[in-house]
Structure formats: structure tokens, C-alpha cells
Image (cartoon, rainbow, N blue to C red):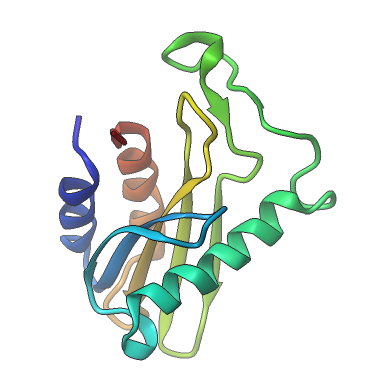
Length: 139
């Protein structure tokens, strides 16, 4: 099972990947980054994307209910399922994909992948990021 650095390097192998990070959406801190960051500042990007993640997960309309045990999740009922699976933000020249990570503690971490719109494949990136999130080991 890959850790943060290995997961980020794997994400950067996706076509069109410009940058990737693992972010705690409660604190807004980047737990790891690789590649470029929008605006050139990975810490500012982490804080700003964490704000988006926090809004989505705390929204009663987008994410009804609190964190609940994942049905049939590996690791038994102690795993917590984030209320939102992923967020996709599109701009004129890029995609931002935020994939929430299910953990045994509080599920407040997400993977952020920044893709070039001309070279990236959003569908493939979403599938691969979901796989990475499932295998990610935090510790």
C-alpha cells in the first residue's frame, strides 16, 4: 500500500498532470505536494482547496448526514466514509479533481490533482484517483 509520496508520484504519471497534493481539509495543510501549484504557492492552494472541500462536506444540500461507517468497507465498521466522494472544478485551461480519502480515524484528507485541460483525461483521472485514495496509507 503506497504512502503519500508514492501516491502523489503515481498521480503525476496521469496524462496532463500538472501538480498533485494530499491535503487535510480541516486544517488546510498540505501533507504532501508534487509538481506545480496554481498560482505557484502549494500552501495557498492547499488552504483554498481545503475551504472548497469543507464547504462541500459540511453542506446539508450536497452532503446530507454526518460521517457514517462505510457499508461493506474493508477494515470493518470502524472506517469512516466521507460524505462527498469527489469534487471537480473546471477552468478554461485546467481541471481540478479533489478526491476524498476514507480512513479509519476521521476521513478529513483529500487528494487534489491539477490537470491540463488540453492533455488531461478527466474520466481516467477520476478513476485512477479513486484507486489511489482507496490504497493510500496515512501514517
